[in-house]
Amino acid sequence: MMTCRECHTKYVSTPYGWLPRELAQNYKDMNVHYEEQKNHIHQVLINKYLAPVTENLLNLGYKELYEVLNKTPGFGTHNTYPTFRKHMNKYGSQSAFRGIDRIEYLKSLMHLISFLKLGLTQEEEALISEWELIGKNKRDYLKSHSVAPASHKTK
Image (cartoon, rainbow, N blue to C red):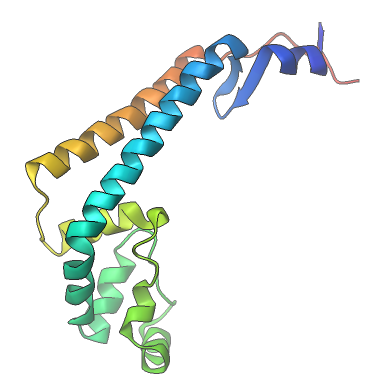
């Protein structure tokens, strides 16, 4: 039986179990590559699509904007349309999707580009597919290499 200290010196905790420390650097490298790719895609999409997406959203009426944002991951709106309309009257349409340029909303921006039929180029779709594949490979690596270490003492 291992003590907690022995266990934590040999393994790194992951969502899928415990990754042996000697494999942790590979996973860290995958994470770095994943984040670099994500930042690159974000910059490409922001540069080309932020203005058209914003313009399209601003041209919608409150009802259409409410419906579009409720279908967009990360941009859920107020509980009811009357509450949403009251917010829009007070703060303006742009407040409903503020922060869309932040990296946390990358998937939301991708959804809106598709929803508004602004059309990604083949190169942009390839970048996104590669990024998603990197994420899948990263998760698969963790799943296949994580183990449940032998039980250990808690004291």
